[in-house]
Amino acid sequence: MKIGIFDSGYGGKLALQQCQKRIPQHEFIGFFDHKNAPYGDRSPEEIYKLTSHGVNNLFDQDCKLVLLACNTASARALRTMQEAEPDKKVLGCLIPAIEAALENQPKQKFEPPRRIGIIATRHTVDTRKYQREAFKIAPLAKVFPIATPKLVPWIEAGETNSKACQDYLKVHIQTLIDEHQIDTLILGCTHYSALKTIVKNLFPSLLIIDSAQAQAEKLVDYLARHPELQ
Ligand code: DGL
Image 1: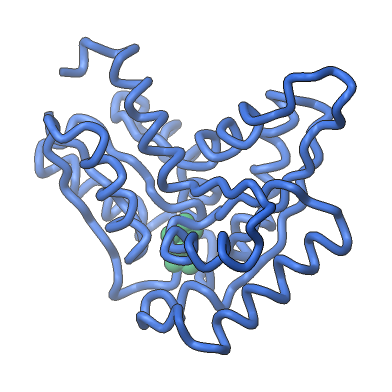
Image 2 (image 1 turned 90 degrees about the vertical axis):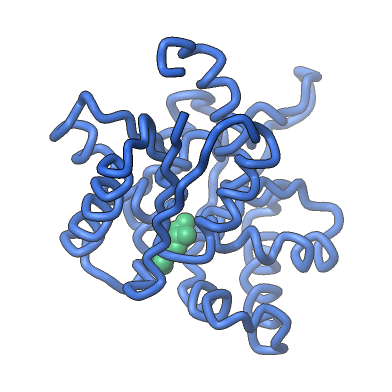
């Protein structure tokens, strides 16, 4: 089966690799809109237009299912797209990431719920979608999103090892730890998968949830529950 992967750029490539690793029997086709990245600086209308253009291009290439491997597009465009064309199967990456964070809750009742920090684009933060989805699954969950708009341009430019990028990352995550005592961090932008090792080395005690990886893992479950698609 052909499965499309859409993103504004490099994050889609990382998401595609995660999917290929888990389900190599499927053919993955990417639409990575480097030309128009970053989406984080665009208007909601532009994000919708660019996302639906990319997604339709993937359906035109005979994809049966398209993954929005972009938190920003999932936050800003997914719901409207699903309502406009309910027959087209388009899946986002916010719910997989928040589910992965909440599945990792302590089992013992006397342990407090996890405190989940999220770094993401401004759009993803402004829509408050992560908080809303978390509330549906675990009303007591504590979720603290913070916008880190400078990261996508650095990642698109291949500058993740620069001191400026690493200092910026360090300051923002440390703020989440100091102000909210987070113990879990969602990389709420698929581009940030490229920073996972750096974040792990900087903050070894944090549980890191990578939204690209979480989406690939949930895709495996989804396909098992929908054999009719294959
Ligand atoms: N990978 C996109 C995301 O997950 C990056 C958005 C952008 O281009 O700013 O949000």
